[in-house]
Structures are given as structure tokens and as C-alpha cells.
Length: 511
Image 1: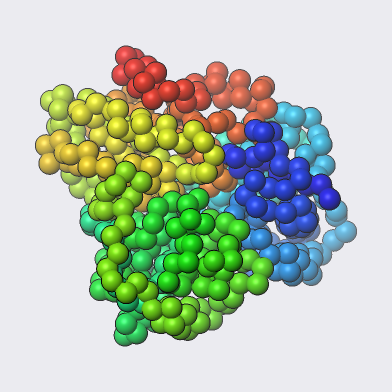
Image 2 (image 1 turned 30 degrees about the vertical axis):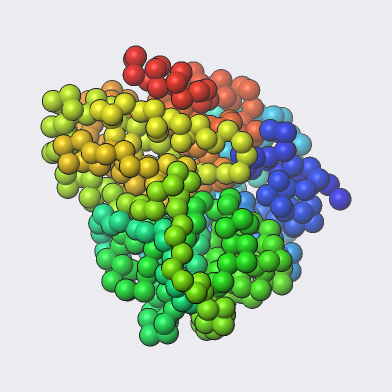
């Protein structure tokens, strides 16, 4: 059985996975996900626009993001659920897009993959009770647009609107998280693990972590974040739990090594699950949209009793265990969202005006397993000491345990949060541009981004919608972007692929 998938950075030979996904997804699963996307497009064209159908579109799109669901049974059940809500005879097959003109395919892929990222953020906001009519309506509009015979110019407009809507969605999620769990504040987080039973929570969902913390507060079980859950330590309503102890391991792509025979229960709340090895399969649990064959799934009741019982049964480490980040550090500092950074904006502005801070680098994005990502570690290490680095998403694990020192009391490395917290970086950039009475492109600010999956795509589209130029993107450019579309992005937005840290830093600072 063949498949076609080129939605992630590590796609086979930089072209497409056609036999089995590099992520571990098999052909039958990939084809089921294509069928699900086709049904969602039919639902957008035929179904009534209501909250039930909107949620079906959002969670269905989220299900097809890389490293979310490997479970054929649950995907088929979702297809059947969507089918019941399709109220007309309109048919669509997403495979027709894979076979069409490469520029049309490229633009429609940009829209679809960006839309998947928006769906992830909309899902997280919705579970906290936050919705936005413009965001919800766009799922129908964009999926309908993908199914239509639109021109290149019409599709380019829809690409930019995808970026516009994602900005609204990230703003919505930022509001949902901060109003529910408080404004993030700087915290130091250890990577060392205390003896005794513990649970590792990975993914992105703050609500799932909150519910687990409440259910374990008197159980003698410690909780450790993993991957994109690290920023949760900065939220006051999560940090108040004394058994939220620290962060286990590094980025998601190292889980097969780091979870190997670990004496703890592991809860996956959203995407970033890799094929589960036998050495820890018996202690893995999933919830929300993430599912894996033969793994216990915690349903909508969010009763985490099986996870807690497994942690107690395994017992954890017998003695405290010292663990470090990639570069040997054992302390990570989080909590520099826009609320924190803008509270000291006057200090940043003064430091820039005085010349103490000569440049600001935003180095962040998705991490991945393919070679070439050490570029980001080396880049940060080589940045001048009179520069500061903003970072976010799991790409920061390449360097977030480094001690880069301070400038006038401002840490040189500022962790702004999860991938969806790109909104914080955008808000800070906009406010700084106002303070200096210039455009964002005129600031001493450079964006050096890594991408892996579809949430990074929608963030990139937001940056393009805002007209931000000179973005350096890597470690490779998206396989789904055709040469003609790439030329448009280069000509209009000056997007460039990363080269070497030395070349890129020299080019940035000599402008």
C-alpha cells in the first residue's frame, strides 16, 4: 500500500513519504487521515455551521497533525462520526490536490497545514471555554476554498488570511491560558528527579496538567513536565502545587531514549508521541486527541486513576537522580511571556538606546530528529554578548540549559513559552516598534526559526501576514513549497534558508 505525506520537515528525501512515514506513521494510517481530511472538507461544504460541526472540524484537523494519532480504529470512528453530520451529496478526495499543478498544490497545502496548526490552538482554547467567531468561521471558509478551483492570486490571499486568523487564535489562547492560570512569571526549573513515584506529562495541554495535579495532590506522587509542557511551571495556578517538581528530559524527539525503562507513568496530552517502544509501553497513557494502538486512553471524564496507580506501582527512582539538558546544565528558566518582558520594556529600550543591547535574536520553533539542528545550539553560543535571545517552542531544548549571563539585569536568554506563545514574541516586537517609532522590520531584531510540523507553518504564515521580512528558516525549507511559490516568498518577504551560524550571524549584524 502506498501513501503520500509531505507535511513535516523530515519527510523522506526532502520530497514526500510514500511507503511509510519517517515519523513512524504507516501507509494505512496515512490514508485514513487523508480520508478524514476529505470528510472534513465535505462537512465544511455540506454540513450546518454550528458548534458541534465546528468542534468536529477542529479536533479532526488536530488529529491529523504529525505525531498525534497512530490508531486506525479511533481515526475510522472519527470518520464515521463526521459522515453522520454531512447533509448533502458533495464528494471530495484530498488526493486530487496531491496530483494537481504543483503551485496550486503548494498553496493549498500551505492553507491546509496552517489550518491544522490553528486547529491545535483553537482546541486548547476551547477546552478552557474560549471561542472566537472569526476563527470558527474560517475553518469552513478555508476548507471550502481548498475544494474550489481558485486562482494562484486567490489562494495567496487565503494563505495570508490563514496567518491573520492564526494571530487571532493565538491571542485567544493566550487570553484563555492567562485568565485561567494567571500571568506567567519567571521561574527556575530543575531537571533533576527526586526519589519516589512520579508521572511525566508531555504534550501541550495546560488543562490536562491542571486536572492531574489536582487528582494527585495527596497521593505522594510527584509530577514532572516534559517537552512543550515545561512553560507550565511559570503559571501561578499550576506552580502553586508543591508536587509539580521539575522537568524530565529534553525535547520530544528524544523520548524513545529518555523514556526507556523509566520507572514512571507517562501521560501524552497532545501531539509529539513517537512509536512506543516495548521497554516502556506498559506505562504510557494518552488523552485528548492523541491515541496509539494498545495504549490505555483516558477519555473525556479525565479520570487519571490508571496513570496514578501505575506511577505508584512503578515506585520511581530509589534515590534522587541527577539529570541535565543537552549542554550539561540542570536549571532551566521559564516565564518570559509578553506580560513579563513588557513589564521591563523600559529597561530593554534604554539598554538598546545606550548600546548595551545591540541586537535581539528570536531563535525558536520546533525541534526534530533529522541531522542539522545543532545549527541552533551553535548559533546561540556564537551570538555576541551584547545581544539577547528570545526563544519559544521545543527548539529551545538545543540551548535552554546554557548560562548566557545578563545585560543590565536582563537575562540574555528569555524563554517565552510554547509554540503557541509566538503571540508573546509578536506582541513584544510590535510594542518595541511603537516605542522606537519604527516598523518591526527596522528593529535590531532577527528571526531565526526551526520548523517541524504544522503549528510552525501557521506561525510562519502569521509572520508573513504581518509583513515581517528577512526570516531565516531551517533546517530545510518545506517540501510542499514549490519553486514558484518559494520565489514569491523570497521576493516579497526575503525569506532565506539557514546556512552556517557564522555566515548568518555575520550577515545579520552587518546589515
